[in-house]
Length: 463
Image 1 (cartoon, rainbow, N blue to C red):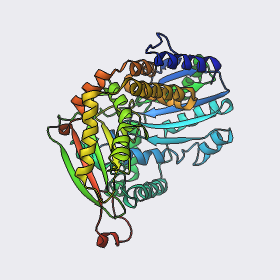
Image 2: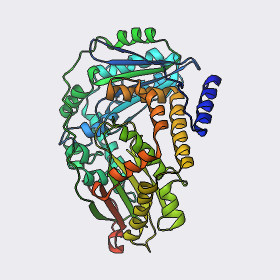
Image 3: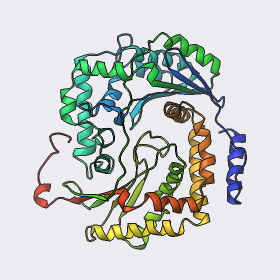
Image 4: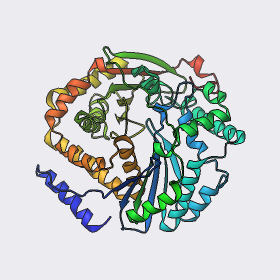
């Protein structure tokens, strides 16, 4: 980190401690250009090291995959590493990793991204490789079968044969929301994955992996005009494609608490998942919600941990947050939840835990956070945000998503100031409006009876 940036950050935090927020703070530099084929290109210049971070994000995530194609967004993340006619499988790894970098990809509710941080020597080869797999892939049945098996094994390992099976990330939205985009099993039902053929995969690719459905962001030791020139060279001739319209993801207001109890043959202790529906990402309430999520869940000093684990001793652990665990509070583009995941001793009842939980929420709604508590959380959130932006690949990722959702990367520069302005009265008002029983869903996972636990292996399919 450059010395002047460290000084700027310390100055901001010192100002916060005295109740003041600097009028000016460090801003991430950005330059934006849209190619004739619709590809948006964002460049953030930073000459602190001879490296770059590349992120290309496509507007296709769990929420956007069509009915009958559950798990396709995630499956396709894997397919994108299976090579092309020009760069067979393994070429991408050899070129980027051989140049001192690394590659990865991940799928979230509203996007799939591919990232490569590396020294500058690998920059132009990485651009060529990304453009090459935006043009076409190696659509072979062998590749599809291989990656389908990989994804299904992921489902078995992470869901079917694990205690709690990600129920707080998969089952909870399925109960909290009503529409398919928000409520389906994003890992994929085995029946949908098994039914997919190579033509289905090719069609999915052609519809969603288009230049006009993507944002390419480069952060690091580069100059915008040079990047724009190279991106035009490699991506400019890729034709625009017809992209499906975004599905209707709106949800009717919830009018009553939703509840379900589920047996778990792998769990040794019971667990609760509590999910409150959250406001739209573009509202100020969403920023307040991000702060509230941290007040309630940020480590052992958080309100819920202190109340449930330390004071009343009705829980073993508490974690969670807004848009948790599959993203940060600022990267979603449809309905999301504030989720609490609570494990508790088997000698306590669900009502014991929920009683203590409700008391902690009621205290926040009535009294709000004290000044020191709010300052601590606000300072930590802003510090974490700036720290993220200091790393080229993380900066590229955050900028790409802001541009993908809003058409403008400058959103990343607005968040610290908005966080700093959240006050105790807003926190209380948020808790009274959103953290109410009629706006929540509660799932109770309880250890299955011994007779069920004796059954070996996982389920045959993800439902």
